[in-house]
Image (cartoon, rainbow, N blue to C red; front, top):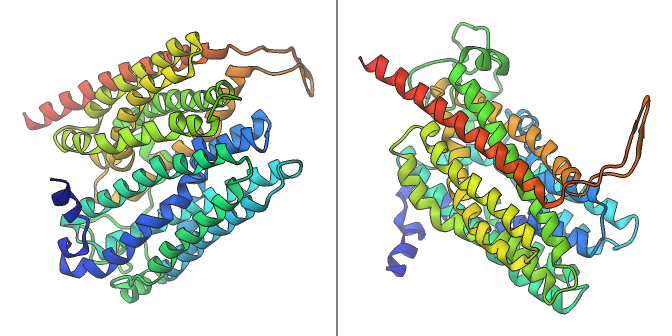
Length: 462
Protein backbone atom coordinates (compact mmCIF):
# COMPACT_ATOMS: atom_id res chain seq x y z
CA UNK A 1 0.00 0.00 0.00
CA UNK A 2 2.81 2.39 0.95
CA UNK A 3 4.73 1.50 -2.22
CA UNK A 4 1.65 2.14 -4.30
CA UNK A 5 1.24 5.59 -2.77
CA UNK A 6 4.90 6.46 -3.27
CA UNK A 7 4.75 5.33 -6.89
CA UNK A 8 2.39 8.21 -7.68
CA UNK A 9 5.19 10.64 -6.75
CA UNK A 10 7.59 9.23 -9.37
CA UNK A 11 8.07 11.18 -12.64
CA UNK A 12 7.24 8.04 -14.62
CA UNK A 13 3.68 8.22 -13.23
CA UNK A 14 3.11 11.68 -14.70
CA UNK A 15 1.96 12.60 -18.24
CA UNK A 16 4.84 12.47 -20.70
CA UNK A 17 4.85 16.21 -21.47
CA UNK A 18 4.93 17.08 -17.75
CA UNK A 19 7.73 14.73 -16.74
CA UNK A 20 10.81 16.94 -17.35
CA UNK A 21 9.39 19.85 -15.37
CA UNK A 22 7.93 17.58 -12.70
CA UNK A 23 11.22 15.71 -12.16
CA UNK A 24 13.12 18.95 -11.56
CA UNK A 25 10.42 20.46 -9.37
CA UNK A 26 10.17 17.24 -7.37
CA UNK A 27 13.78 17.80 -6.32
CA UNK A 28 12.90 21.37 -5.36
CA UNK A 29 9.82 20.29 -3.39
CA UNK A 30 11.96 17.77 -1.50
CA UNK A 31 14.68 20.24 -0.49
CA UNK A 32 13.71 23.93 -0.66
CA UNK A 33 10.74 23.65 1.78
CA UNK A 34 13.23 22.84 4.53
CA UNK A 35 14.40 26.44 4.20
CA UNK A 36 10.80 27.65 4.28
CA UNK A 37 10.23 25.60 7.45
CA UNK A 38 12.99 27.47 9.27
CA UNK A 39 11.12 30.73 8.60
CA UNK A 40 7.68 29.55 9.74
CA UNK A 41 6.17 31.66 12.53
CA UNK A 42 6.07 28.76 14.96
CA UNK A 43 9.75 28.01 14.29
CA UNK A 44 11.56 31.31 13.87
CA UNK A 45 9.33 32.80 16.58
CA UNK A 46 10.64 30.25 19.09
CA UNK A 47 14.24 30.99 18.12
CA UNK A 48 13.65 34.74 18.19
CA UNK A 49 12.17 34.73 21.69
CA UNK A 50 14.28 32.09 23.39
CA UNK A 51 17.67 32.86 21.82
CA UNK A 52 17.50 36.46 20.56
CA UNK A 53 15.13 37.63 23.34
CA UNK A 54 13.13 39.89 21.02
CA UNK A 55 10.44 42.17 22.41
CA UNK A 56 6.76 41.29 22.21
CA UNK A 57 6.32 43.83 19.40
CA UNK A 58 9.22 42.30 17.44
CA UNK A 59 7.83 38.81 18.00
CA UNK A 60 4.45 39.96 16.69
CA UNK A 61 6.14 41.39 13.59
CA UNK A 62 7.94 38.09 12.95
CA UNK A 63 4.73 36.09 13.34
CA UNK A 64 2.82 38.47 11.06
CA UNK A 65 5.43 38.44 8.28
CA UNK A 66 4.30 35.26 6.46
CA UNK A 67 0.80 36.65 6.02
CA UNK A 68 1.18 40.37 5.38
CA UNK A 69 3.97 39.53 2.90
CA UNK A 70 1.04 38.50 0.68
CA UNK A 71 0.48 42.22 0.10
CA UNK A 72 3.61 42.20 -2.09
CA UNK A 73 2.12 39.63 -4.47
CA UNK A 74 0.82 42.25 -6.91
CA UNK A 75 4.25 43.91 -6.94
CA UNK A 76 5.99 40.67 -7.93
CA UNK A 77 3.35 39.98 -10.59
CA UNK A 78 3.93 43.40 -12.14
CA UNK A 79 7.72 43.05 -11.90
CA UNK A 80 7.64 39.73 -13.77
CA UNK A 81 5.25 40.93 -16.48
CA UNK A 82 6.96 40.46 -19.84
CA UNK A 83 10.02 38.86 -18.24
CA UNK A 84 11.15 35.25 -17.98
CA UNK A 85 9.58 33.72 -14.90
CA UNK A 86 11.92 30.88 -13.93
CA UNK A 87 15.06 33.05 -13.53
CA UNK A 88 13.12 35.51 -11.35
CA UNK A 89 11.77 32.68 -9.19
CA UNK A 90 15.29 31.27 -8.90
CA UNK A 91 16.65 34.65 -7.82
CA UNK A 92 13.94 35.00 -5.17
CA UNK A 93 14.62 31.48 -3.88
CA UNK A 94 18.34 32.23 -3.70
CA UNK A 95 17.66 35.43 -1.75
CA UNK A 96 15.73 33.39 0.83
CA UNK A 97 18.79 31.18 1.33
CA UNK A 98 20.96 34.28 1.64
CA UNK A 99 18.74 35.52 4.47
CA UNK A 100 19.06 32.14 6.22
CA UNK A 101 22.84 32.50 6.13
CA UNK A 102 22.56 36.07 7.40
CA UNK A 103 20.45 34.85 10.34
CA UNK A 104 23.11 32.26 11.18
CA UNK A 105 25.72 35.01 11.67
CA UNK A 106 23.60 37.49 13.65
CA UNK A 107 24.58 38.35 17.22
CA UNK A 108 22.00 37.46 19.84
CA UNK A 109 22.35 40.90 21.47
CA UNK A 110 21.46 44.29 20.00
CA UNK A 111 21.30 45.03 17.11
CA UNK A 112 20.97 41.30 16.34
CA UNK A 113 17.28 40.95 17.29
CA UNK A 114 16.24 43.92 15.12
CA UNK A 115 18.30 42.57 12.21
CA UNK A 116 16.61 39.19 12.67
CA UNK A 117 13.18 40.80 12.35
CA UNK A 118 14.26 42.58 9.15
CA UNK A 119 15.72 39.38 7.67
CA UNK A 120 12.54 37.41 8.37
CA UNK A 121 10.25 40.07 6.89
CA UNK A 122 12.33 40.44 3.71
CA UNK A 123 12.67 36.68 3.26
CA UNK A 124 8.89 36.21 3.58
CA UNK A 125 8.31 38.91 0.96
CA UNK A 126 10.64 37.02 -1.38
CA UNK A 127 8.73 33.78 -0.68
CA UNK A 128 5.48 35.57 -1.55
CA UNK A 129 7.02 36.31 -4.93
CA UNK A 130 7.96 32.66 -5.39
CA UNK A 131 4.39 31.52 -4.67
CA UNK A 132 2.89 34.20 -6.94
CA UNK A 133 5.07 33.47 -9.97
CA UNK A 134 5.23 29.70 -9.54
CA UNK A 135 1.54 29.48 -10.45
CA UNK A 136 2.53 30.47 -14.00
CA UNK A 137 4.93 27.53 -14.19
CA UNK A 138 2.23 25.16 -12.98
CA UNK A 139 -0.32 26.52 -15.43
CA UNK A 140 2.01 26.35 -18.43
CA UNK A 141 3.78 23.06 -17.73
CA UNK A 142 1.12 20.80 -16.22
CA UNK A 143 -2.07 19.73 -18.05
CA UNK A 144 -5.31 20.92 -16.48
CA UNK A 145 -6.58 17.36 -16.08
CA UNK A 146 -3.78 16.47 -13.64
CA UNK A 147 -2.57 19.87 -12.41
CA UNK A 148 -4.31 19.62 -9.03
CA UNK A 149 -2.96 16.12 -8.42
CA UNK A 150 0.58 17.17 -9.27
CA UNK A 151 0.54 20.30 -7.13
CA UNK A 152 -1.13 18.30 -4.35
CA UNK A 153 1.89 15.99 -4.24
CA UNK A 154 4.17 18.99 -3.91
CA UNK A 155 1.94 20.25 -1.07
CA UNK A 156 2.33 16.95 0.80
CA UNK A 157 6.12 17.17 0.54
CA UNK A 158 6.11 20.79 1.73
CA UNK A 159 3.89 19.93 4.70
CA UNK A 160 6.13 17.01 5.61
CA UNK A 161 9.22 19.21 5.54
CA UNK A 162 7.60 21.93 7.67
CA UNK A 163 6.28 19.36 10.16
CA UNK A 164 9.45 17.30 10.69
CA UNK A 165 12.45 19.39 9.62
CA UNK A 166 12.40 22.00 12.42
CA UNK A 167 11.58 19.37 15.09
CA UNK A 168 14.77 17.45 14.32
CA UNK A 169 16.85 20.60 14.05
CA UNK A 170 15.67 22.20 17.27
CA UNK A 171 16.07 18.97 19.22
CA UNK A 172 19.75 19.50 18.50
CA UNK A 173 19.37 23.16 19.52
CA UNK A 174 18.35 21.94 22.99
CA UNK A 175 21.64 20.09 23.28
CA UNK A 176 23.76 23.02 22.11
CA UNK A 177 22.38 26.58 22.51
CA UNK A 178 24.43 27.96 19.60
CA UNK A 179 23.73 25.13 17.15
CA UNK A 180 21.13 27.18 15.24
CA UNK A 181 24.05 28.83 13.43
CA UNK A 182 25.29 25.72 11.65
CA UNK A 183 21.72 24.38 11.42
CA UNK A 184 20.61 27.33 9.28
CA UNK A 185 23.75 27.08 7.12
CA UNK A 186 23.27 23.34 6.50
CA UNK A 187 19.62 23.95 5.60
CA UNK A 188 20.67 26.67 3.13
CA UNK A 189 23.09 24.26 1.43
CA UNK A 190 20.48 21.50 1.15
CA UNK A 191 17.86 23.92 -0.17
CA UNK A 192 20.34 25.25 -2.75
CA UNK A 193 20.07 21.88 -4.51
CA UNK A 194 16.38 22.60 -5.05
CA UNK A 195 17.07 26.12 -6.30
CA UNK A 196 19.53 24.83 -8.90
CA UNK A 197 17.07 22.13 -9.98
CA UNK A 198 14.23 24.64 -10.38
CA UNK A 199 16.43 26.97 -12.44
CA UNK A 200 16.69 24.24 -15.09
CA UNK A 201 12.94 24.07 -15.67
CA UNK A 202 11.84 25.04 -19.14
CA UNK A 203 8.61 27.04 -19.25
CA UNK A 204 6.47 25.68 -22.07
CA UNK A 205 5.14 28.29 -24.47
CA UNK A 206 7.26 31.00 -22.86
CA UNK A 207 8.08 32.79 -26.08
CA UNK A 208 4.41 33.14 -26.97
CA UNK A 209 3.54 34.09 -23.40
CA UNK A 210 6.08 36.91 -23.25
CA UNK A 211 4.95 38.21 -26.64
CA UNK A 212 1.44 38.64 -25.27
CA UNK A 213 2.56 40.10 -21.97
CA UNK A 214 4.74 42.74 -23.61
CA UNK A 215 1.92 44.22 -25.65
CA UNK A 216 0.81 47.45 -23.97
CA UNK A 217 -2.83 46.86 -24.89
CA UNK A 218 -3.01 43.35 -23.41
CA UNK A 219 -5.81 43.18 -20.86
CA UNK A 220 -7.65 40.28 -19.24
CA UNK A 221 -10.91 40.08 -21.20
CA UNK A 222 -13.99 37.93 -20.55
CA UNK A 223 -14.50 34.86 -22.64
CA UNK A 224 -16.04 31.49 -21.87
CA UNK A 225 -12.90 29.36 -21.86
CA UNK A 226 -9.34 30.42 -21.05
CA UNK A 227 -7.15 31.38 -24.01
CA UNK A 228 -4.29 29.16 -25.08
CA UNK A 229 -1.90 31.58 -23.39
CA UNK A 230 -3.18 33.33 -20.27
CA UNK A 231 -6.48 35.17 -20.64
CA UNK A 232 -5.16 38.03 -22.74
CA UNK A 233 -6.92 39.24 -25.86
CA UNK A 234 -4.74 42.14 -27.03
CA UNK A 235 -6.83 42.86 -30.09
CA UNK A 236 -10.20 42.93 -28.38
CA UNK A 237 -12.06 46.12 -27.69
CA UNK A 238 -10.90 47.74 -24.45
CA UNK A 239 -13.39 47.65 -21.61
CA UNK A 240 -13.56 49.34 -18.25
CA UNK A 241 -11.71 46.95 -15.92
CA UNK A 242 -13.25 45.60 -12.76
CA UNK A 243 -11.69 46.65 -9.47
CA UNK A 244 -11.75 45.23 -5.97
CA UNK A 245 -14.50 47.69 -5.06
CA UNK A 246 -16.75 46.99 -8.03
CA UNK A 247 -16.60 43.24 -7.40
CA UNK A 248 -17.36 43.60 -3.69
CA UNK A 249 -20.21 46.00 -4.51
CA UNK A 250 -21.79 43.91 -7.25
CA UNK A 251 -21.20 40.35 -5.98
CA UNK A 252 -23.04 40.42 -2.65
CA UNK A 253 -22.45 36.73 -1.92
CA UNK A 254 -18.71 37.04 -2.36
CA UNK A 255 -18.73 40.24 -0.29
CA UNK A 256 -20.33 38.42 2.63
CA UNK A 257 -18.04 35.44 2.08
CA UNK A 258 -15.08 37.81 2.51
CA UNK A 259 -16.69 39.38 5.61
CA UNK A 260 -17.15 36.05 7.40
CA UNK A 261 -13.81 34.79 6.15
CA UNK A 262 -12.21 37.89 7.65
CA UNK A 263 -13.94 37.35 11.02
CA UNK A 264 -13.18 33.62 11.14
CA UNK A 265 -9.66 34.12 9.83
CA UNK A 266 -9.01 36.80 12.45
CA UNK A 267 -10.16 34.41 15.19
CA UNK A 268 -7.86 31.71 13.87
CA UNK A 269 -4.84 33.99 13.46
CA UNK A 270 -5.18 35.80 16.78
CA UNK A 271 -5.63 32.47 18.56
CA UNK A 272 -2.66 30.89 16.80
CA UNK A 273 -0.32 33.82 17.44
CA UNK A 274 -1.41 34.08 21.08
CA UNK A 275 -0.85 30.35 21.48
CA UNK A 276 2.67 30.54 20.04
CA UNK A 277 3.54 33.32 22.49
CA UNK A 278 2.01 31.39 25.38
CA UNK A 279 3.81 28.15 24.53
CA UNK A 280 7.14 29.99 24.29
CA UNK A 281 6.48 31.37 27.78
CA UNK A 282 5.29 28.10 29.34
CA UNK A 283 8.17 26.01 27.94
CA UNK A 284 10.88 28.30 29.32
CA UNK A 285 13.53 26.30 31.21
CA UNK A 286 11.83 22.92 30.82
CA UNK A 287 13.78 19.96 29.42
CA UNK A 288 14.05 20.07 25.62
CA UNK A 289 12.20 23.38 25.54
CA UNK A 290 13.00 24.07 21.87
CA UNK A 291 11.83 20.65 20.68
CA UNK A 292 8.64 20.77 22.76
CA UNK A 293 7.87 24.28 21.51
CA UNK A 294 8.32 23.29 17.85
CA UNK A 295 6.29 20.12 18.37
CA UNK A 296 3.32 22.10 19.69
CA UNK A 297 3.54 25.20 17.50
CA UNK A 298 4.34 23.55 14.15
CA UNK A 299 4.81 19.78 13.94
CA UNK A 300 1.48 18.54 15.32
CA UNK A 301 -0.84 20.87 13.36
CA UNK A 302 1.11 20.49 10.09
CA UNK A 303 1.29 16.69 10.36
CA UNK A 304 -2.45 16.42 11.03
CA UNK A 305 -3.19 18.87 8.21
CA UNK A 306 -1.20 16.72 5.78
CA UNK A 307 -3.12 13.60 6.82
CA UNK A 308 -6.55 15.23 6.51
CA UNK A 309 -6.10 17.00 3.15
CA UNK A 310 -7.33 14.01 1.05
CA UNK A 311 -10.57 13.70 3.05
CA UNK A 312 -11.23 17.45 2.90
CA UNK A 313 -10.49 17.43 -0.85
CA UNK A 314 -13.08 14.74 -1.55
CA UNK A 315 -15.63 16.68 0.50
CA UNK A 316 -14.87 20.00 -1.19
CA UNK A 317 -15.38 18.43 -4.62
CA UNK A 318 -19.01 17.68 -3.70
CA UNK A 319 -20.22 20.94 -2.12
CA UNK A 320 -20.10 24.72 -2.40
CA UNK A 321 -17.35 26.50 -0.49
CA UNK A 322 -19.86 28.23 1.83
CA UNK A 323 -21.20 24.86 3.04
CA UNK A 324 -17.62 23.62 3.34
CA UNK A 325 -16.77 26.55 5.62
CA UNK A 326 -19.68 25.74 7.93
CA UNK A 327 -18.14 22.30 8.54
CA UNK A 328 -14.58 23.53 8.84
CA UNK A 329 -15.72 26.36 11.13
CA UNK A 330 -16.78 23.83 13.77
CA UNK A 331 -13.13 22.79 14.07
CA UNK A 332 -12.16 26.46 14.52
CA UNK A 333 -14.59 26.81 17.42
CA UNK A 334 -13.53 23.59 19.17
CA UNK A 335 -9.81 24.43 18.79
CA UNK A 336 -10.12 27.96 20.19
CA UNK A 337 -12.30 26.84 23.11
CA UNK A 338 -9.86 24.00 23.77
CA UNK A 339 -6.98 26.48 23.99
CA UNK A 340 -8.90 28.40 26.67
CA UNK A 341 -9.61 25.28 28.73
CA UNK A 342 -6.02 24.06 28.55
CA UNK A 343 -4.71 27.57 29.19
CA UNK A 344 -6.60 27.64 32.49
CA UNK A 345 -4.74 24.51 33.63
CA UNK A 346 -1.30 25.82 32.64
CA UNK A 347 -0.24 22.28 31.62
CA UNK A 348 1.67 22.85 28.40
CA UNK A 349 1.50 19.23 27.21
CA UNK A 350 -2.29 19.31 27.04
CA UNK A 351 -2.13 21.87 24.23
CA UNK A 352 -1.40 18.91 21.96
CA UNK A 353 -5.11 17.99 22.05
CA UNK A 354 -6.58 21.22 20.61
CA UNK A 355 -3.57 21.43 18.26
CA UNK A 356 -4.76 18.17 16.67
CA UNK A 357 -8.18 19.76 16.11
CA UNK A 358 -6.50 22.89 14.73
CA UNK A 359 -4.45 20.72 12.37
CA UNK A 360 -7.59 19.06 11.05
CA UNK A 361 -9.01 22.52 10.40
CA UNK A 362 -5.83 23.54 8.58
CA UNK A 363 -6.12 20.58 6.24
CA UNK A 364 -9.39 21.99 4.97
CA UNK A 365 -8.17 25.57 5.16
CA UNK A 366 -5.20 24.89 2.87
CA UNK A 367 -7.63 23.79 0.15
CA UNK A 368 -10.34 26.37 0.82
CA UNK A 369 -7.90 29.27 0.83
CA UNK A 370 -6.54 28.35 -2.60
CA UNK A 371 -9.77 27.18 -4.25
CA UNK A 372 -12.73 28.81 -2.48
CA UNK A 373 -12.98 31.88 -4.70
CA UNK A 374 -13.55 29.65 -7.75
CA UNK A 375 -17.11 28.95 -6.55
CA UNK A 376 -17.91 32.65 -7.04
CA UNK A 377 -15.77 33.77 -9.99
CA UNK A 378 -16.00 32.74 -13.61
CA UNK A 379 -12.76 32.07 -15.46
CA UNK A 380 -12.27 35.65 -16.59
CA UNK A 381 -12.29 37.01 -13.04
CA UNK A 382 -10.45 34.30 -11.08
CA UNK A 383 -7.17 36.24 -10.65
CA UNK A 384 -8.96 39.36 -9.39
CA UNK A 385 -11.17 37.41 -6.99
CA UNK A 386 -8.08 35.66 -5.63
CA UNK A 387 -6.32 39.01 -5.42
CA UNK A 388 -9.11 40.33 -3.19
CA UNK A 389 -8.81 37.30 -0.94
CA UNK A 390 -5.01 37.54 -0.74
CA UNK A 391 -5.14 41.27 0.02
CA UNK A 392 -7.67 40.87 2.83
CA UNK A 393 -5.62 37.96 4.20
CA UNK A 394 -2.62 40.27 4.30
CA UNK A 395 -4.62 42.93 6.15
CA UNK A 396 -5.83 40.58 8.89
CA UNK A 397 -2.40 38.98 9.00
CA UNK A 398 -0.88 42.37 9.72
CA UNK A 399 -3.35 43.15 12.51
CA UNK A 400 -3.74 39.74 14.18
CA UNK A 401 -0.36 39.22 15.91
CA UNK A 402 -0.31 42.71 17.44
CA UNK A 403 -3.87 42.22 18.67
CA UNK A 404 -2.89 38.80 20.03
CA UNK A 405 0.07 39.98 22.12
CA UNK A 406 -1.85 43.09 23.25
CA UNK A 407 -4.79 41.05 24.54
CA UNK A 408 -2.45 38.47 26.04
CA UNK A 409 0.04 40.76 27.82
CA UNK A 410 -1.49 44.28 27.69
CA UNK A 411 0.69 47.42 27.70
CA UNK A 412 2.43 49.82 30.04
CA UNK A 413 1.22 53.44 30.44
CA UNK A 414 1.54 54.98 26.98
CA UNK A 415 1.50 58.59 25.88
CA UNK A 416 0.01 59.33 22.46
CA UNK A 417 -0.18 62.96 21.24
CA UNK A 418 -3.35 64.30 22.84
CA UNK A 419 -4.08 61.07 24.72
CA UNK A 420 -2.59 59.25 27.71
CA UNK A 421 -3.42 55.54 27.80
CA UNK A 422 -3.45 53.97 31.26
CA UNK A 423 -1.72 50.64 31.76
CA UNK A 424 -3.59 47.55 30.60
CA UNK A 425 -2.64 44.21 32.16
CA UNK A 426 -4.06 42.11 29.35
CA UNK A 427 -6.56 39.29 29.69
CA UNK A 428 -4.15 36.37 29.52
CA UNK A 429 -5.59 33.05 28.37
CA UNK A 430 -9.04 34.62 28.16
CA UNK A 431 -7.93 35.87 24.74
CA UNK A 432 -9.09 32.44 23.55
CA UNK A 433 -12.62 33.18 24.72
CA UNK A 434 -12.54 36.25 22.45
CA UNK A 435 -11.37 34.13 19.50
CA UNK A 436 -14.01 31.50 20.29
CA UNK A 437 -16.73 34.14 20.10
CA UNK A 438 -15.33 35.44 16.80
CA UNK A 439 -15.28 31.90 15.41
CA UNK A 440 -18.91 31.44 16.52
CA UNK A 441 -19.93 34.67 14.77
CA UNK A 442 -18.21 33.52 11.58
CA UNK A 443 -19.92 30.12 11.82
CA UNK A 444 -23.36 31.72 12.05
CA UNK A 445 -22.48 33.99 9.13
CA UNK A 446 -21.34 31.10 6.93
CA UNK A 447 -24.48 29.11 7.76
CA UNK A 448 -26.71 32.01 6.70
CA UNK A 449 -24.65 32.63 3.57
CA UNK A 450 -24.69 28.94 2.66
CA UNK A 451 -28.48 28.86 2.99
CA UNK A 452 -28.73 31.95 0.77
CA UNK A 453 -26.50 30.44 -1.91
CA UNK A 454 -28.43 27.16 -1.90
CA UNK A 455 -31.76 29.00 -2.07
CA UNK A 456 -30.56 31.09 -5.03
CA UNK A 457 -29.31 27.97 -6.80
CA UNK A 458 -32.66 26.26 -6.25
CA UNK A 459 -34.54 29.29 -7.59
CA UNK A 460 -32.26 29.43 -10.64
CA UNK A 461 -32.82 25.73 -11.38
CA UNK A 462 -36.57 26.21 -11.04
